[in-house]
Length: 241
Image 1 (tube, rainbow, N blue to C red):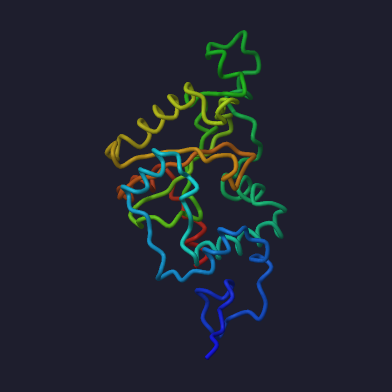
Image 2: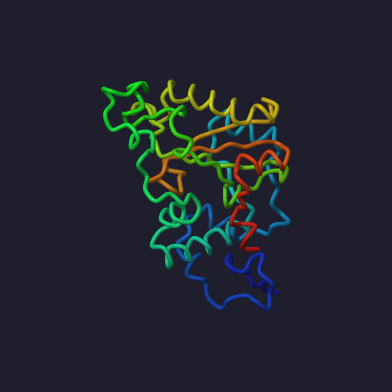
């Protein structure tokens, strides 16, 4: 007896809500996302904290994927944002970061580096984390990966560049050291070192290209501390349930 295969766009959707045709937001998925969307949540295994650390340490960032139903919601919501805001980036800047411009305040406040007491490096495209607090914002990752639910996934957004080495296309050694120091000071005061890890996505994996950012993952942190550093932020994935 022949069996009828279920289209990938019908997975994790109640049968009485199956669309007759593939929704527009799922039409042009790459092969990997199409396979993931066409997988039952119950057959998906979340990465453990040990595995997450290994992924970052080995720079195998493409192993980070979303739970199938979350990936579906991610694509649906991004399609909505593109219709309403023109691009996901415009939405992030206007509604999530609430930055009226991307000019680093450290530069805007000191137009003449020759007369400033700040280090000259602050007037280049590569500012440091010692500039204005207004140049940095910590928010939840709106659509976190399929990882242990005790892991909190944050994104640190900056108005200044996080320069890559053009030869390796990875962060320069100097910037990596600065981020290490920033992460240790910001998160290490409340979370044990072994429970903190950070990474910057490869260019090919970035969903937002025009605003610099890197990711921080914390294993089982105190919720009050997360509230403090994110100023009470709530990820979109929770708001759109």
